[in-house]
Length: 438
Ligand SMILES: Nc1nc2c(ncn2[C@@H]2O[C@H](COP(=O)(O)OP(=O)(O)OP(=O)(O)O)[C@@H](O)[C@H]2O)c(=O)[nH]1
Ligand SMILES: [Mg+2]
View (spheres, rainbow, N blue to C red):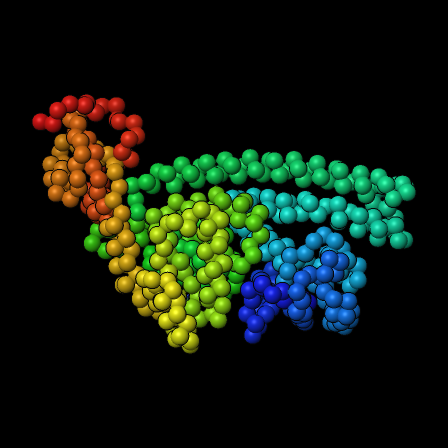
């Protein structure tokens, strides 16, 4: 059973306020049998809902034989406890539901570790609540958890159990943080090693069509589905832009409004590609009546990740099924350079490729290239296309410090595989002899 408290600042679709929650619940393999909403100015401290609505909810949950009640809001341990007691049913909040989907969709070790950390961090502060709850239930008739006699409301077995659990959770969190830090360092090295290539990252609200677009552009065959959080890992694939030019294209985990912040923090390694991209393609599902709010939710997460200053092209995806033309017009007005596309039909792909090449051309890099002496033709190309700032001759070849636009560097790399590129200012290669240009 779904329950939503509509607060004045809740950014939901008023025509279908629990639509997104229902999709999330389905992705968590539950079946929705009833739903209700209440408008309030704030969440009640004890039950979130008002007394009358709470009674109605309990009655409906019992009549429908709901196993679990899912709130669209994030609740405090006290609220969860209060509602569980009143309804005699398990209650979970929005963040727990999202964490649950992530946990069930996580396939790689990286994703699994990250979800586990986010789950433990979200649960840890709630442990006391959980145990006092169990202890109270036990005290009401059943045996106590450890079979021991509880003190007069203090330091009962539940209390001791909380301490043990806290320590276990704390140790596990420390271990997970260490493992994830290792993954992050590996990722940073990996992403750093691509400094000479133009990198584009798909970002956007979950289910907006990022993976479908990646498949369309690169010919990949990544899993797509009409459900939230189908993708939880980052995949980076070479994208052929024509004329020998190419860039790297990354697809990553989607965002949702009010994403639990522990989750974003733990998925930092997965988002590494996006954070260091030269260009972000912000994929928007323009057929959704919530497109505008979804853009804002994505921008918010990007700001939190400190990548709001990376150049962005907004892609108004799913134009093939968008029936509200005024929405697309409004978007195009507020997001200059926005392109209408359809990952499904292929509409707008040419203009998208052009826009990316345009960006590449505006983006020069300072690099050092090492050319074997046999590549006289390539040397001429660099002299013609790049600004050569220094050259050093060595026994095997010549080293050039150049400023060149990414598109051209990418094209040369596509045509000649024989030269080495390093960022300017890094260690010069051992055999390069600094001397006068001949
Ligand atoms: N009609 C239409 N459907 C699309 C288009 N692009 C994607 N879809 C559908 O939208 C659904 C979601 O697509 P995905 O590519 O999985 O979306 P995503 O952004 O990768 O989603 P997550 O990985 O779950 O965050 C799928 O059912 C796609 O077939 C489009 O241009 N038009
Ligand atoms: Mg996807």
